[in-house]
Amino acid sequence: MRIRTFGYFVREACKSLYRNNWMGLASIGTVAVSLIIFGASLITVMNANYLAARLESNVEIIAYLKDNVAEAEARALKEEINDLPGIAKAEFKSKDQALREFRQELGAQQNMIDALGGKNPLPHLYVINTIAPEDVVKVAEGLQGLKQVQKVDYGKDFVEKLFAVIKWVRIVGITIIVLLGLAAVFLIATTIRLTVFNRRKEIEIMKVLGATNWFIRWPFLLEGMALGFTGALLAVIVVGISYVSFTNYIQSNFNYAVFGLQTDPQFMLVLGGSMLGAGMFIGAVGSGISMRRFLRI
Amino acid sequence: MINMINVSKVYPNGTKALTDITLRIEKSEFVFLVGPSGAGKSTMTKLIFREEQPSRGQILFNRKNISRYKQREIPYIRRAIGVIFQDFRLLQSKTVAENVAFALEVIEASRKEIRKAVPEALELVRLADKADVMPSELSGGEQQRVAIARAIVNNPPLVIADEPTGNLDPDTSWEIVTLLQEINKCGTTIIMATHAKEIVDSMRKRVVALEKGKIARDEERGGYGYED
Image: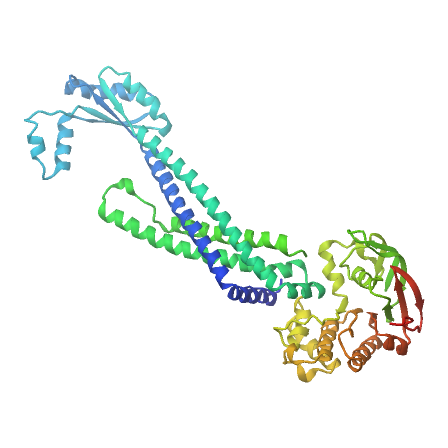
């Protein structure tokens, strides 16, 4: 294709975008709304996956010892724990140490500890890391088998709940995206159909003059893609601004590492890129449908 | 140049438009296609132009069977044929020169070719001074001359004119036919479907008369032969 020809396609596409401005705006709006939801679902799913991956890779097992185990016996348990298969590291934390840490976390509210009346209700515990994340369940069972161990705790419930949430976000998100995507495709198809109708005389003449089918199709395809792209651009701006302000809000108001939302440039690039790509795809499919049905060439 | 061998055309609704036509048209010929409405003139031009496919028989264009061309090759057949219609079919939103240039743009000619060929074509139809005028400001005869310029601007070996004078008064009709004759003298084959008795009678060119889908007459230096 000659560059000049491409210029012709772009000019023709622009002209008819200008001519069908109301239909065009409706199409752009629909694309934008469906892609905003697409973007929001993508952000949720990707962040949840990211969070789940981080949690999974450093799941710690905490083994609480029984209350009647003396500190010396508790410390001696370390060797026995280390003998279990799959253990990377086992760190002992005495009840005194646990209480000190608790006191630090409480900060100004020391009276809560004073209220305990000098007793320490916290158990001795071991913080254990496994070599491989998938060994967690096996190791936890092994620890449970030790007679000094009262209770074994690891992030299993949380991870499982998180995955259930991700699954639902995905299902609901995909359903909405598909429905709105179809609406957007339909609207773009209607817009392009109008263009084809407006230009039917010209198309007729082009055929007589020996224009190839692709020469005739390109301006329509570009028009559809431009509509999709513009809608996507709007969606990217809306989603981008909301997400950045949301993460800023979270980070300045909650200090939990668990809310480590992804804001690195690569993530934003993937997000924006896939939204723009989806927009152009919707546009191309929309005009493709119109051309198949209304541009018998 | 065109060789129709036992060509029949039956439309899907059952209309028998052409039956067993065998016709040969040589390069540089000027052929009038006459006959009553519905005799099959339009179908014949559509077959040559590959707008329709024959139901039976073969059509050779420059010794190539045009029904064997694939869908995407059809545009390239059409580039070898200039077409002129009764209703001109100019684009009202483009100037005269832009209408002529459009024929070259859609076949992706270079800007240089366009700059050279468009004024030449307009010169030939004597509309060089109207290059930047809109078609709506022209008379019918002038519009048809623009259409002729558009049909010949890429030098096709064949021009098909489908009742080119149907909407024009007699004087203007003569202008158009004279122009087609000039183009014919430069070696372009011309097939003109027409009802213009006077023109056919006085031109003394080859006349192919169709009746009910069959060739009723094929005479060198013939006349119109119908009283209508």
